[in-house]
Amino acid sequence: MTIRNIRVDERLIHGQVATVWSHSLNVSRIAVINDKVVKDEMMINALKVARPAGVKLSILSVQKGVRNFTAGKYDADEVLVLFRNIEDVKRAVDLGMPITTFNVGNLSHKEGQLKIKKSVSLSKEDISAIRDLSARGITITAQMIPNEPAANILELIKKAEG
Image 1 (cartoon, rainbow, N blue to C red):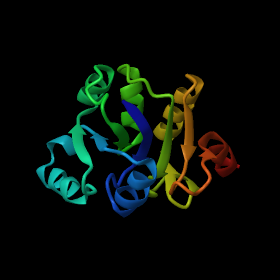
Image 2: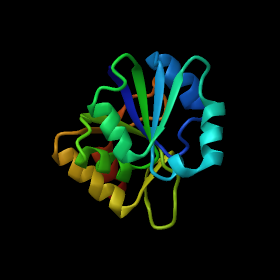
Image 3: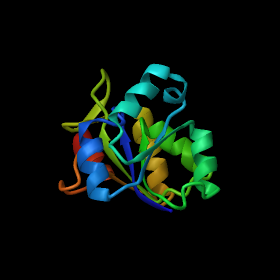
Image 4: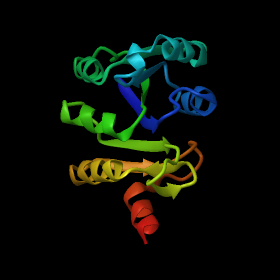
């Protein structure tokens, strides 16, 4: 199994992921990991429709995602892992998922958040989790599309904080 990319994108599977990311990474499976989505039938159906043709789809809770990846369930696949938020990535790491790097693609702005890029705004909790994960040696970048240079998220935070 090769995890081709781990991405945080609150939109999960959408045009960029379905066409640009999945094709440029040449994935055979997309794994969506989020505790709320796994219980939302309408969202599950939307993800099934948005899934690129010929690409398998797994929709998993954080705990089941960690269990499946650490057990080697997807060893035959090239996988794009999608998390809806940074908190879920941190929980997955805390539960033992071997994550060494991930990219933050899209987290829309909400009141009181720090906008670090046009497409990425972070809460105080997100920034704390990013700093914690970085301190553990995990590389975290911000990147909207594959041909855009990946930016170090800690540098973007520092710049936005002034």
